[in-house]
Structure formats: C-alpha cells, structure tokens
Length: 256
Image 1 (cartoon, rainbow, N blue to C red):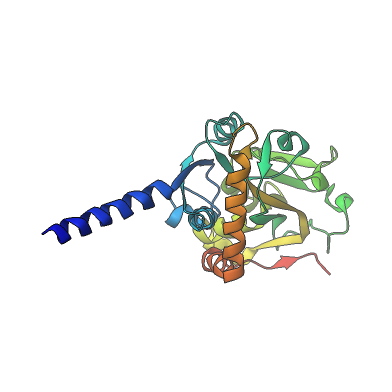
Image 2: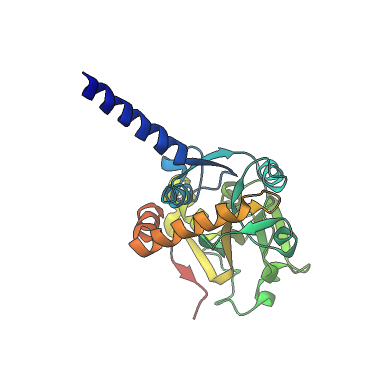
C-alpha cells in the first residue's frame, strides 16, 4: 500500500514538473488563407509550423485571430506576445524583434489568357500602362507597382478582385500567388483553365513572426522559435507540411 502511494506521489510530481516546464506564448494573426485561417485544418499550415516550432522548445502557442489593425496594435504594445506573419519595414524594426523568415510570398499578376489587350510578354512597368489592374485595398502595393500612371481599381478582398477580373472589368489582378491558387481551387474551378499568371513575380516578400521589443523575454521567444523552426527544416517536416497543404499552381504566360 505504501509502495503504491509512493508511486502515485512520484507520478503526480512528475506531471506537475512537466506542466511547470511548459510555457505558453500568446500570439495574434489575421485570417490569410491558405497560410493561416481560423477555420482551416490546424488553422492553416503556417499556424501549424509555428505551433510545432514552439512545441520543440516545450512552449505551447495560443493564437487568437483578429482584423489586421487590432492584431498589430495588440502586438505593438505587448498585450500579446507575438504576431504572425508580418513583413519587415524600418518603422516596424523600431518596434519589433523579428524571427528568421518563415515563408516568402510571391506577388503576381493574375489575368485571363484570352485577354487580347495584354502584351505578348512582360517587359517592364510601362507595358502595364494601357491596362486596368485590381488590387485588394487591405494590402500595400509592392514598390515595383507603385506608379501613379497605373490604373487601379481597389476591391474589398482578393476573391472580389478575381470576380472583377472574370467579369472583364479589369485586365490584371495584383495578388499573392498562393492565395490566388487557393481561391481558384476553392471558388473558381470552372474558370481554372481560363486564368493565368502574367509575367514574373512582381515581388518576393519574406514573412516573419515578430515580438515587441518592450517585452522582457522578447529575445527568448524569438530564439526559441528560431531554434524550433530550424529543427523542422532540418528534419524535413517543414517541407512536408508545405507540400501537403499548398494547392497546385496555375500556369504562367508573358515570360520568356
């Protein structure tokens, strides 16, 4: 009986010790399928990568999804312990510590392959001047497309931008390549063969996890995540997660 009680005591002690060692980090994000989205399996593959990276350091990540402005403010003032994903800027680097890059997003031009207004290939920004472009008003245009001579129509989201393209109201849509592929396979499969990316990527933008410098343990959080992220990459788990979750890409035109 005494031996049994001793074993129970030791087991409870081990459990308590394990719980004490497990830290929790609170994060915020904004729905951005297919990368991370509250209603996706595992909340999207980037959310899954971040969760597994922290888990390798015995840290549990808890993610709350909010609109971008609220997420940014919560992270900026240290109300939450981190935000993902976010791109770098000189202003943001004054506020945050950034992780190693998690993914790169490629900004592309989406079009209808039957559009006769398109040039035979993309040469430079001047080849777009006669055309009408749509972009999601929530996203900042890449520097390569910041030209006041370009004719833009802003839409409330990426799905609407594709619908505007299909209705022939614009010639091109500025959109993240993986987001376009996801939306096409989710909402526009009947139009898949009619859609193409035009020209090369307009920008490649690294995406990061960021933690406010004002937090005492900011560097510890970043270091733990980076270590876990590198372990995922070295083990092949990172590549497998991405391969299992990205939809097939449509073809490109206007490239040599």
